[in-house]
Length: 84
Image (cartoon, rainbow, N blue to C red):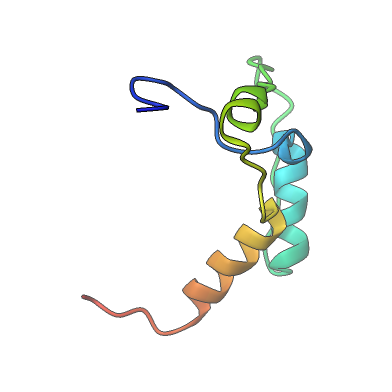
């Protein structure tokens, strides 16, 4: 197959966010949420992921934003949760 044995990062360059940005989006979508930071953490790694391969090989483009996903999860949690 076309992608057999291949590894792809799924996403888009426009959706590459820093952790603090993700916290801000969550806070915006879910107003009661608080974002806590800790300046004493020494590990400041930040990962920039590339999505060129999936776009070039498969023509994939993301249809939803991180904000969309947070809103969808918030709505799912706010509704009745059933034990299947």
